[in-house]
Amino acid sequence: MHVETLKVFCDLVEMQSFSLAAERNFVTQSAVSQQVRTLEEKFRRKLLERVRGRREIRLTTAGEVFYKESKNVLASYNQLNEQMNRLVGRISGVVKVATVYSIGLHELPPRVREFMSKFPNVKIDLEYSRTTRVVRDVLKGIVELGIVAFPEKRRGLTVVPMASDKLVLICPPDHDLAKRKRIKAKEVNDQDFVLFERDIPTRKATDKILKSYGVSVNKAAEFDNIETIKRAVEVGFGLAIVPYPSVMDEERNGQLHVVKFSEKDWLRPVGVIYRSDRELTLAAKKFVKILSDGEAETAGA
Image 1 (cartoon, rainbow, N blue to C red):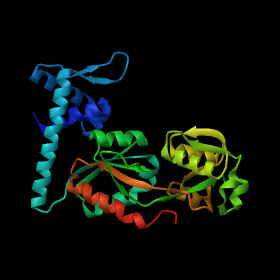
Image 2: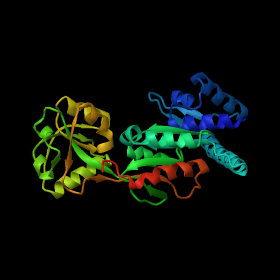
Image 3: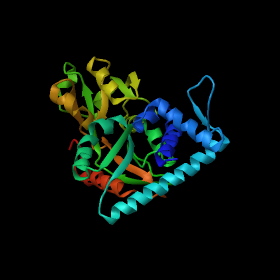
Image 4: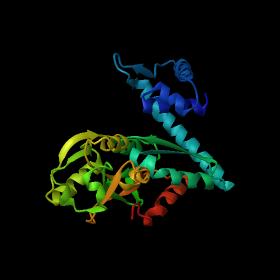
Protein backbone atom coordinates (compact mmCIF):
# COMPACT_ATOMS: atom_id res chain seq x y z
CA MET A 1 0.00 0.00 0.00
CA HIS A 2 1.40 3.37 -1.04
CA VAL A 3 1.02 6.80 0.53
CA GLU A 4 -0.43 7.98 -2.81
CA THR A 5 -3.31 5.52 -2.39
CA LEU A 6 -4.18 6.98 1.00
CA LYS A 7 -4.14 10.46 -0.53
CA VAL A 8 -6.49 9.40 -3.34
CA PHE A 9 -8.89 7.90 -0.79
CA CYS A 10 -8.89 11.05 1.38
CA ASP A 11 -9.33 13.33 -1.65
CA LEU A 12 -12.29 11.22 -2.77
CA VAL A 13 -13.95 11.49 0.64
CA GLU A 14 -13.36 15.24 0.87
CA MET A 15 -14.27 16.16 -2.71
CA GLN A 16 -17.21 13.73 -2.96
CA SER A 17 -16.33 13.10 -6.59
CA PHE A 18 -14.42 10.32 -8.37
CA SER A 19 -13.68 12.62 -11.31
CA LEU A 20 -12.32 15.46 -9.14
CA ALA A 21 -10.22 13.07 -7.05
CA ALA A 22 -8.84 11.58 -10.25
CA GLU A 23 -8.08 15.02 -11.68
CA ARG A 24 -6.30 16.16 -8.52
CA ASN A 25 -4.09 13.07 -8.49
CA PHE A 26 -3.47 12.88 -12.26
CA VAL A 27 -5.05 9.45 -12.64
CA THR A 28 -8.21 8.10 -14.30
CA GLN A 29 -11.58 7.63 -12.56
CA SER A 30 -11.25 3.89 -13.03
CA ALA A 31 -7.88 4.03 -11.25
CA VAL A 32 -9.55 5.75 -8.28
CA SER A 33 -12.25 3.07 -8.17
CA GLN A 34 -9.64 0.32 -8.40
CA GLN A 35 -7.59 1.79 -5.55
CA VAL A 36 -10.68 1.90 -3.32
CA ARG A 37 -11.48 -1.74 -4.19
CA THR A 38 -7.88 -2.74 -3.44
CA LEU A 39 -8.07 -1.11 0.00
CA GLU A 40 -11.39 -2.80 0.77
CA GLU A 41 -10.00 -6.18 -0.28
CA LYS A 42 -6.84 -5.70 1.78
CA PHE A 43 -8.73 -4.85 5.00
CA ARG A 44 -11.75 -7.04 4.19
CA ARG A 45 -14.06 -4.18 5.07
CA LYS A 46 -16.32 -1.98 2.99
CA LEU A 47 -15.02 1.59 3.38
CA LEU A 48 -17.43 3.57 1.20
CA GLU A 49 -21.05 3.34 0.17
CA ARG A 50 -23.06 5.29 -2.38
CA VAL A 51 -26.26 7.05 -1.27
CA ARG A 52 -29.02 5.72 -3.50
CA GLY A 53 -30.42 8.32 -5.88
CA ARG A 54 -27.72 10.84 -4.97
CA ARG A 55 -24.10 11.45 -5.94
CA GLU A 56 -23.03 11.51 -2.29
CA ILE A 57 -20.33 9.14 -1.05
CA ARG A 58 -20.71 8.04 2.55
CA LEU A 59 -18.08 6.51 4.85
CA THR A 60 -18.93 3.27 6.58
CA THR A 61 -17.91 2.82 10.23
CA ALA A 62 -14.70 1.12 9.06
CA GLY A 63 -14.27 3.88 6.47
CA GLU A 64 -14.41 6.58 9.12
CA VAL A 65 -11.62 4.90 11.08
CA PHE A 66 -9.56 4.38 7.92
CA TYR A 67 -10.06 8.00 6.78
CA LYS A 68 -9.04 9.43 10.17
CA GLU A 69 -5.90 7.32 10.41
CA SER A 70 -5.01 7.94 6.76
CA LYS A 71 -5.08 11.67 7.45
CA ASN A 72 -2.69 11.11 10.34
CA VAL A 73 -0.33 9.09 8.13
CA LEU A 74 -0.42 11.75 5.39
CA ALA A 75 0.26 14.51 7.93
CA SER A 76 3.24 12.59 9.30
CA TYR A 77 4.53 11.89 5.80
CA ASN A 78 4.26 15.57 4.86
CA GLN A 79 6.06 16.52 8.06
CA LEU A 80 8.83 14.04 7.22
CA ASN A 81 9.23 15.58 3.76
CA GLU A 82 9.22 19.05 5.27
CA GLN A 83 11.98 18.24 7.75
CA MET A 84 14.16 16.49 5.16
CA ASN A 85 13.80 19.41 2.73
CA ARG A 86 14.76 21.88 5.44
CA LEU A 87 17.99 19.98 6.05
CA VAL A 88 19.13 20.80 2.52
CA GLY A 89 17.45 24.22 2.35
CA ARG A 90 15.03 23.05 -0.35
CA ILE A 91 11.45 24.30 -0.49
CA SER A 92 9.10 22.00 -2.37
CA GLY A 93 5.70 20.34 -2.18
CA VAL A 94 2.11 21.39 -2.83
CA VAL A 95 0.23 24.25 -1.15
CA LYS A 96 -3.52 23.71 -1.31
CA VAL A 97 -5.37 27.02 -1.49
CA ALA A 98 -9.10 27.79 -1.74
CA THR A 99 -10.42 31.23 -2.63
CA VAL A 100 -13.40 33.08 -4.08
CA TYR A 101 -13.59 33.83 -7.81
CA SER A 102 -13.14 37.61 -7.62
CA ILE A 103 -9.83 37.22 -5.74
CA GLY A 104 -8.57 34.08 -7.46
CA LEU A 105 -9.15 35.27 -11.01
CA HIS A 106 -8.11 38.90 -10.68
CA GLU A 107 -5.73 39.34 -7.73
CA LEU A 108 -3.82 36.11 -7.19
CA PRO A 109 -2.24 35.48 -10.63
CA PRO A 110 0.64 38.00 -10.24
CA ARG A 111 1.32 36.77 -6.68
CA VAL A 112 1.32 33.14 -7.84
CA ARG A 113 3.70 33.99 -10.69
CA GLU A 114 6.03 35.76 -8.26
CA PHE A 115 5.95 32.80 -5.90
CA MET A 116 6.58 30.25 -8.66
CA SER A 117 9.54 32.24 -9.96
CA LYS A 118 11.11 32.19 -6.50
CA PHE A 119 10.15 28.63 -5.57
CA PRO A 120 9.84 26.59 -8.80
CA ASN A 121 9.72 23.28 -6.92
CA VAL A 122 6.43 24.20 -5.21
CA LYS A 123 3.01 23.77 -6.81
CA ILE A 124 0.05 25.98 -5.87
CA ASP A 125 -3.13 23.87 -6.01
CA LEU A 126 -5.85 26.54 -6.36
CA GLU A 127 -9.58 25.92 -5.96
CA TYR A 128 -12.46 28.37 -6.38
CA SER A 129 -15.47 28.31 -4.10
CA ARG A 130 -17.91 30.37 -2.03
CA THR A 131 -16.66 31.97 1.17
CA THR A 132 -18.58 29.62 3.46
CA ARG A 133 -17.05 26.58 1.79
CA VAL A 134 -13.54 28.08 1.79
CA VAL A 135 -13.77 28.55 5.57
CA ARG A 136 -15.20 25.07 6.02
CA ASP A 137 -12.46 23.45 3.92
CA VAL A 138 -9.74 25.26 5.91
CA LEU A 139 -11.23 24.15 9.23
CA LYS A 140 -11.59 20.55 8.00
CA GLY A 141 -8.00 20.50 6.78
CA ILE A 142 -8.96 19.90 3.13
CA VAL A 143 -6.91 22.96 2.12
CA GLU A 144 -4.00 24.57 3.94
CA LEU A 145 -4.85 28.19 3.12
CA GLY A 146 -8.01 30.12 2.35
CA ILE A 147 -8.14 33.60 0.82
CA VAL A 148 -11.39 35.48 1.34
CA ALA A 149 -12.94 38.93 1.44
CA PHE A 150 -14.09 40.34 4.79
CA PRO A 151 -12.31 37.57 6.76
CA GLU A 152 -13.92 37.12 10.17
CA LYS A 153 -11.95 36.30 13.29
CA ARG A 154 -13.17 33.07 14.80
CA ARG A 155 -11.91 30.38 17.11
CA GLY A 156 -9.45 28.04 15.43
CA LEU A 157 -8.54 30.39 12.58
CA THR A 158 -5.61 32.75 12.09
CA VAL A 159 -6.18 35.72 9.77
CA VAL A 160 -3.32 37.44 7.91
CA PRO A 161 -4.40 40.72 6.23
CA MET A 162 -3.72 41.35 2.56
CA ALA A 163 -4.22 44.55 0.57
CA SER A 164 -7.77 45.88 0.75
CA ASP A 165 -9.73 46.50 -2.47
CA LYS A 166 -11.70 49.58 -3.32
CA LEU A 167 -15.35 48.91 -4.09
CA VAL A 168 -16.48 50.80 -7.19
CA LEU A 169 -19.65 51.33 -9.18
CA ILE A 170 -19.79 49.90 -12.70
CA CYS A 171 -22.19 50.72 -15.53
CA PRO A 172 -22.40 50.24 -19.32
CA PRO A 173 -20.47 52.83 -21.40
CA ASP A 174 -23.75 54.32 -22.69
CA HIS A 175 -25.28 54.84 -19.23
CA ASP A 176 -25.88 58.39 -17.94
CA LEU A 177 -23.39 57.78 -15.12
CA ALA A 178 -20.65 56.89 -17.63
CA LYS A 179 -19.87 60.61 -17.83
CA ARG A 180 -18.89 60.61 -14.15
CA LYS A 181 -15.56 59.72 -12.52
CA ARG A 182 -16.77 60.01 -8.94
CA ILE A 183 -20.13 59.76 -7.24
CA LYS A 184 -21.73 59.99 -3.79
CA ALA A 185 -23.62 57.01 -2.41
CA LYS A 186 -26.92 58.90 -2.22
CA GLU A 187 -26.82 59.41 -6.01
CA VAL A 188 -27.52 55.73 -6.69
CA ASN A 189 -30.76 55.79 -4.68
CA ASP A 190 -33.61 53.93 -6.43
CA GLN A 191 -31.36 52.71 -9.28
CA ASP A 192 -31.60 49.15 -10.68
CA PHE A 193 -28.75 46.97 -9.41
CA VAL A 194 -27.21 43.61 -10.20
CA LEU A 195 -26.24 42.22 -6.80
CA PHE A 196 -24.20 39.45 -5.25
CA GLU A 197 -26.36 36.86 -3.50
CA ARG A 198 -27.33 37.70 0.08
CA ASP A 199 -24.97 35.29 1.85
CA ILE A 200 -21.86 36.65 0.11
CA PRO A 201 -19.79 38.94 2.39
CA THR A 202 -19.35 41.69 -0.23
CA ARG A 203 -23.14 41.89 -0.60
CA LYS A 204 -23.62 42.11 3.15
CA ALA A 205 -21.04 44.89 3.37
CA THR A 206 -22.48 46.94 0.48
CA ASP A 207 -26.00 46.59 1.88
CA LYS A 208 -24.74 47.89 5.23
CA ILE A 209 -22.92 50.87 3.68
CA LEU A 210 -25.88 51.83 1.49
CA LYS A 211 -28.23 51.60 4.47
CA SER A 212 -25.92 53.85 6.52
CA TYR A 213 -26.41 56.56 3.86
CA GLY A 214 -30.16 56.00 3.68
CA VAL A 215 -29.90 54.57 0.18
CA SER A 216 -32.31 52.00 -1.24
CA VAL A 217 -31.75 50.28 -4.61
CA ASN A 218 -33.90 48.08 -6.83
CA LYS A 219 -32.81 44.45 -7.20
CA ALA A 220 -32.69 43.62 -10.91
CA ALA A 221 -30.83 40.33 -10.45
CA GLU A 222 -28.68 38.38 -7.98
CA PHE A 223 -25.69 36.18 -8.83
CA ASP A 224 -22.97 34.38 -6.88
CA ASN A 225 -20.27 34.94 -9.51
CA ILE A 226 -18.38 38.16 -10.28
CA GLU A 227 -18.07 37.29 -13.98
CA THR A 228 -21.84 36.82 -14.37
CA ILE A 229 -22.47 40.14 -12.60
CA LYS A 230 -20.14 41.97 -14.99
CA ARG A 231 -21.80 40.45 -18.06
CA ALA A 232 -25.25 41.37 -16.71
CA VAL A 233 -24.16 44.99 -16.24
CA GLU A 234 -22.70 45.06 -19.76
CA VAL A 235 -26.02 44.10 -21.33
CA GLY A 236 -27.93 46.68 -19.30
CA PHE A 237 -29.51 44.78 -16.39
CA GLY A 238 -28.44 47.55 -14.01
CA LEU A 239 -25.53 48.96 -12.03
CA ALA A 240 -23.27 46.96 -9.70
CA ILE A 241 -20.79 47.53 -6.89
CA VAL A 242 -17.71 45.34 -7.26
CA PRO A 243 -14.03 45.20 -6.17
CA TYR A 244 -11.96 47.37 -8.49
CA PRO A 245 -9.33 44.74 -9.44
CA SER A 246 -12.10 42.57 -10.92
CA VAL A 247 -13.05 45.20 -13.55
CA MET A 248 -9.71 46.75 -14.50
CA ASP A 249 -9.55 44.80 -17.77
CA GLU A 250 -13.11 45.77 -18.75
CA GLU A 251 -12.34 49.41 -17.92
CA ARG A 252 -9.25 49.35 -20.16
CA ASN A 253 -11.17 47.68 -22.99
CA GLY A 254 -14.09 50.07 -22.74
CA GLN A 255 -16.56 47.29 -21.94
CA LEU A 256 -17.59 48.86 -18.64
CA HIS A 257 -17.30 52.31 -17.08
CA VAL A 258 -15.96 52.57 -13.53
CA VAL A 259 -17.15 55.28 -11.14
CA LYS A 260 -15.42 55.70 -7.78
CA PHE A 261 -17.31 56.63 -4.63
CA SER A 262 -16.50 59.88 -2.81
CA GLU A 263 -16.90 58.31 0.63
CA LYS A 264 -14.05 56.42 2.32
CA ASP A 265 -16.26 53.51 3.48
CA TRP A 266 -16.02 51.64 0.19
CA LEU A 267 -13.24 49.19 0.99
CA ARG A 268 -13.19 45.39 0.90
CA PRO A 269 -10.69 43.81 3.32
CA VAL A 270 -9.00 40.65 2.05
CA GLY A 271 -7.10 38.12 4.12
CA VAL A 272 -5.45 34.71 4.26
CA ILE A 273 -6.91 32.25 6.74
CA TYR A 274 -5.47 29.02 8.13
CA ARG A 275 -5.97 26.72 11.09
CA SER A 276 -4.36 28.06 14.25
CA ASP A 277 -3.62 24.59 15.62
CA ARG A 278 -1.52 23.47 12.65
CA GLU A 279 2.01 24.45 11.72
CA LEU A 280 2.10 25.72 8.16
CA THR A 281 4.51 24.05 5.78
CA LEU A 282 7.55 26.14 4.87
CA ALA A 283 6.16 26.57 1.33
CA ALA A 284 2.84 27.84 2.70
CA LYS A 285 4.63 30.29 4.99
CA LYS A 286 6.57 31.69 2.03
CA PHE A 287 3.35 32.06 0.01
CA VAL A 288 1.58 33.84 2.87
CA LYS A 289 4.51 36.25 3.14
CA ILE A 290 4.26 37.13 -0.55
CA LEU A 291 0.51 37.65 -0.22
CA SER A 292 0.76 39.82 2.89
CA ASP A 293 3.76 41.85 1.71
CA GLY A 294 1.49 43.54 -0.83
CA GLU A 295 -0.74 44.85 1.94
CA ALA A 296 0.48 48.43 1.58
CA GLU A 297 -0.28 48.41 -2.15
CA THR A 298 -4.01 48.93 -1.75
CA ALA A 299 -5.67 47.96 -5.01
CA GLY A 300 -7.42 50.77 -6.80
CA ALA A 301 -5.72 53.48 -4.75
